[in-house]
Amino acid sequence: MLNAMGYQEPAEAQSIRSMLHIARLLALIFGILLLIGGIAYVAWIAYLASICATYIGFDPYCGGAIAGALIPAIYLAIAGVFLFLVWTQTKQIEAKVNSHQYEAAKSQTLLWMILGFIFGIILGVILLIAYLKFDPLINQSRAMASGQMPPPGAPPAWGAPPAPAPAPAPTAAAPPAAPPPGAQAAPFCGTCGKPTTYVPQYGRYYCYDCKQYV
Image (cartoon, rainbow, N blue to C red):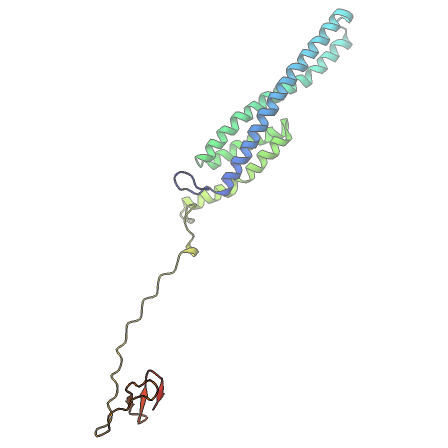
């Protein structure tokens, strides 16, 4: 994928961004649901507390039941707040990925991945997948910084066309050998009708066009 500057974005960065989008969407949806559920649960507990106070009184049994019911409500409220924090933090992580701050983004993803497993397994798994994809990006970034690797989008060295071989210098053709003194004029080729050339070492006339002796 090429951006506006012609830079080819690594596939790992695209995958991390996709995982962050999914995590942010799920955090927003489940955060709203948990907050609504937590508020409704607290309202239900308040209603039960009013019943206990009206008809039974705050005896140890009723008070212990209400106190025990508050624990899930507190968990729902904390989980809802946490999911809204994930929604905001994934934006910051994505901004660091866009600015190629991969190591800082990886450290931040690790923290919220651990918290994600505590408050929501699905979010923890998604952030774990994104976390594992940071290592190739970091290694590639370090290789580019040390000059051992061309930037993304540059043609690989093995794909460059080879330099053309220099053309061989033309060799001057040897002048045709002259027939021996007193010899008759060179005969014409019986096939193509062109004049032939006398070859002293064989004592014969040769047609260079037809590649044959006459």
